[in-house]
Image 1 (cartoon, rainbow, N blue to C red):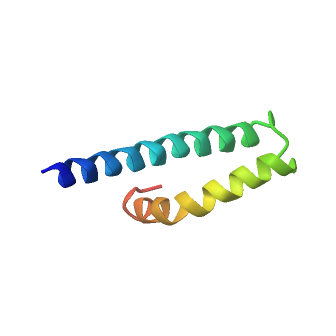
Image 2 (spheres, rainbow, N blue to C red):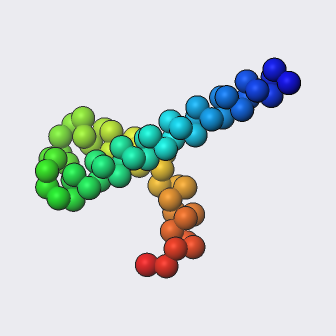
Length: 68
């Protein structure tokens, strides 16, 4: 049971970090769209591209089932 509890704990932490990074990805995308943040800034570009590589494959699956 201890191993199962540890596994559930790790999974919970990974899902929490994924959710947190998704919120950051959405906020950065909105800030870029509204012109508040310069998209050509090196740190913004690095964060946006990194989060995009993590989230876009999963978001593409979700977008298939959500009508636009």
